[in-house]
Length: 296
Image (cartoon, rainbow, N blue to C red):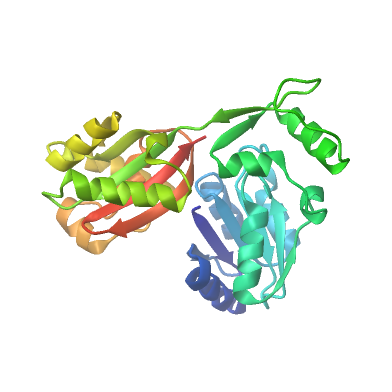
């Protein structure tokens, strides 16, 4: 999950640093100017998997209102007061992972998690939350409510078709890979397999690989793709740079000095799709970096 943390006060910025250290996330300090915050949110709303606002709930609601589309597409939105007393799951608690992230943040900063979705309050199974964790798209949308309502009422749910059928469609998992020159297929395989294990997915779930075109003759990468039986796409430095700017990706100055861009794995994976949800942000292994995304 890729997280943006937005603070509007100095006290909030200190809390943002604490949250970033504990659970990760990029901090954006926009000061007290509402218009600048509103414009910035318009730029990043669909570029991050979760937005954490450290401000009044009303401010957060006003700046996201124009961008809300659907519970199946919107990022998780969480609001925290600047003292860190309450962590509120505001949007996309299930599919977007907002409820789970709320609990994680609350535990990290010792605060009160505020979750209002009925299935969570009643400690019940939620079909859409279950699907999201497995990289599945629950559809149609109206069936989600019907199934979850039935679960809340302790009605029987069947795997076979009934009056209401919820389809769970697998999302495409894409692996972006960066590596040092001469890295073996074995080391790349170990890194990617380990990355997949971190999201509880088998490496065979990967449907596409991606990297920078400078690596198009990299023997280890090509051999790994062949062994896995999937296509590998290579993208130019210019295309990667566009994604880095568009998604405000963090960059390694060392890699940038070598290649011209400081982020290969995340940017390359994003070049493969129009819309994405990060399953795993950039992770570094021995000579290899890996990022995993779900195609929305």
